[in-house]
Picture 1 (cartoon, protein in one colour):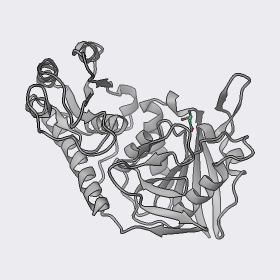
Picture 2 (cartoon, helix red, strand yellow):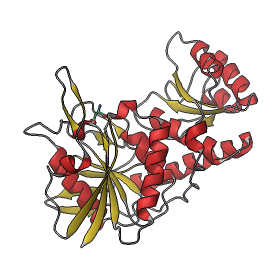
Picture 3 (cartoon, protein in one colour):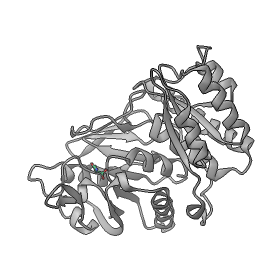
Amino acid sequence: MKHIVVIGTGGTIASRWQGTGYAAEAAGGEVLAVSALPEGVEVTVRDLFTVNSSQLTTGHQLELLRTVHEVLADPSVDGVVITHGTDTMEESAFLLDLHHDDRRPVVFTGAQLPLDSVDGDAAGNLYDALLTAATGRDIGVVITFGGFVHAARGTLKAHTLDAQAFADPSGRPLGRVKFGEIAWARPRSRPEALPLPLPDAGARTPRVDVVMHHVDADPVLFEAALGAGARGIVLIGTGAGNATPEFADAVRRAVDAGVLVALSTRVAAGPVAAMYTGGGAVDLAEAGAVLAGTLRAGQARIAVLAALLTAESPEGRTAALRRIVDATAGREAAAAA
Ligand code: ASP
């Protein structure tokens, strides 16, 4: 038998009608009860939280990270499934993937329709996630959802309501689940895992904000993030990562003050690229922003957070962020080939 541990955290997959709207309520065992178990799989359930994922904090995510490592310390465990809200699944999955150093997989899943829907997607997604956890090896942390297995890195919630909720706009899925079997794409190499954050990291979680550029934008919100004590900021540029000369000045001031700045883009697919001056990515990079490759807002923010938790000095943090971005870019290139 394959022994899979299911960790419940809430989300729509655990949600029921509350009179005015849906909210997470069901324990992990109730969620699991909607799904059949793949043949040869036995399951232990561990309830961690019961929250909708838009309410998660870094403290929750670090607790989830530590719990997964604790579970995998048991050699009789063959894999882990995490039931999680879809809103921020890409953030938690990416954080766990950055620290994952194990041949056994960690599989995130959830649902677009609540647990009490008659035609919901919880049962199918859970079954596929258990299958992924029991049979996948060397795949890291993945999101199994809507019949596909996606690598955590680069994958994001791409549709608010559709059952096919997740996609990697710059890459391809790792696998396709059909008729109880997974057709795997070519294996991808795994980047080196980051060390686990110290046990007290949750108590001194650095603030990391996200600020978006748009027509007529000025850096007032960027400066407000600094004023609020941000240790990291993700600037979401237009196009291939562009803003204005005023933003470039603000980035330089932030970086000079020891703040880690990453540059991502509002565009759905493709990497940011240093092409334009006049406040474009050329100047933002020159001011000290780290180009976030294909990482979009949520995962770029997690990359900055992980770099801040991993290294002490501003130089060490910048180097850690660059390594995360480069490792992701390498995987995207391999996936697209
Ligand atoms: N709002 C829900 C959540 O992220 C959405 C979902 O789970 O699909 O918890």
